[in-house]
Amino acid sequence: MEDHVKLLRGYVDKIYCDFLPVNYANQYNLGLSAATDDALYRIETTSWRKFSNGTALMSENPFESLWNNSYKALNYANLFLEDNVGYNTRYLLDDASDKAYRSFLQGSAYGFRAWFHFCLLRAFAGRGTDGRMLGVPIMTLPSRAENMDYETIVRPALDECVEQIRRDCDSAYFYLPYSNRDYPGESGGNITPSGSALYKGLDKVAIDALRAEIFLFRASPAFNLEAGKEWYDSAAFYAARVIRHKIEKEGALPGGFSTTKKFGWYECNSPEIIWASRHSTAVDTEKCCYPKNFGGSANIVPTQELVDAFPMNNGYPITHPLSGYDPANPYLNRDSRFYDDIFYNGAKVNRFSNSKLMYTFNTAEGGADAPGSSQVSPTGYYIRKFLWLGWNPFDAKPDTGYRCNYLLRWTRTCLVFAEAANMLVGPLTEKYGYTARQALSWIRSRANEMTYDSYLDLASNNPEEFQNLVRNEWRIETCFEGDRYYNLRRWAKSVGELNMTLHGVKITQGFSGGSDMEYDYTTVVERLKYPSLWSPVPYMEIRRCRNLIQNEGWENWK
Image 1 (cartoon, one colour):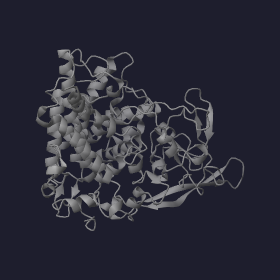
Image 2: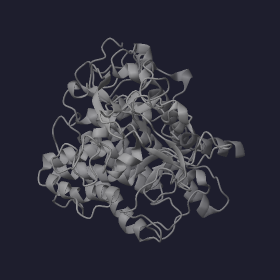
Image 3: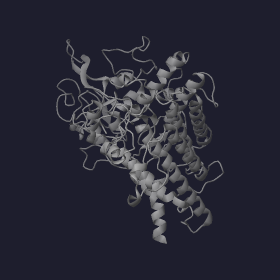
Image 4: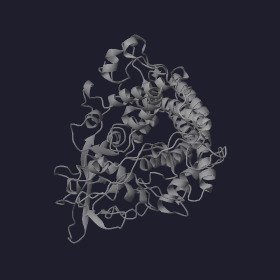
């Protein structure tokens, strides 16, 4: 009996521990960013590089592991949920604790089922070669090899998938505690699962945040063919509910949530987090992002296009006449998120604990980190975001701090609300207690501690201009997290909007000598060449399941 209990509980624990990314140096965060205009894989033969420039073969689909791992995770969730055997099993001696734990496991299994169906949907949903808008195969029963019927596996209509995700969110909401944290929830006190591994486990707040993202996805232009606004309304409703909880519930706690406190990527227990993966001390991200002279290989690097997307610290885009941008000193007075996310020529790596200088980037011509040699950035920029600024490869015993992957967090929910509310009522009209402008202001004001954001005011006078601002805030706030790949596709009207030319910077000594530098932004580092707005279903799945329809533009991958 004890082994049976461990096995059932293990189905949920395995999903949490094995199928959620624990850092950002993976295919679908940093890697996926390198399939957009935000970043570049340095090595030309990597799967994402070949995929994005149109040279990948059918056997080199970088989305194949996402497909396979998501369905494996779904199978574990279904094994737990089958016939309610997981919920009807006793785990703890104390009745109240056992009931709370059973409910948590049951709600988590439904929540995982919603999450992984959404991960699949935003990756593979699209117009099929038959002209229909299709979703992904829905999996709500365990899959066993001995009774698999591949003929029955099909891609249902997009809305069938959205409806299944909605139902699973509703079921998860029924079982989960309101707020799975170390403080009282709405009911006055929750018995929560013990142990730090599940400290940030799923709860009702996380499910509301997930609902908001799902409905915004469905409302987006590429999928909202009927141009209805009800999906935006649902997205705004659930996002507002999360915002209200954060401000009114968590914000009232000593040391709790604050709309003005800046977020640190090493703060694994930050109140900004809504749902996160387990903790890890791996240094994969550092080794992926730093150059060879500081213990890394510069595998994935930022583009000039992303650098130019960061505004000035007065909030104005660098192209605006009031921005104060100086092309001869391009890294001066930029939005603080630029300094938090990007290493540029002259940028320093200071140990966060004592501010001791560990490294200085030299990306000017002839410098150690300049384009042109092995394991350095071909664009002249390096990723700073996510890095543990205590790790130094030259220390006798390098420090490795705890990090995790922030699957859902405050910033994302504010962006969802701002986008949805603006589409419904514009920037300045209140919707569910807040305005779109207010949601964006929370993000922008804390970045630069602005008391007055005149550019936000200017953009708020025009819903279309505000929409462009929201999209740029999505870009810089979630850069390198993988979102831009999906966002560009849900916003786009044609594949031409995806196929861009990417650039880096070449920095040379100024004609006058001294500290003067000249900046050349014309160096082309890659050209994106996608045949379709939609991602391809893995080739082997199309071969195995004869009734599975491929997405438009990938007809030869069949």
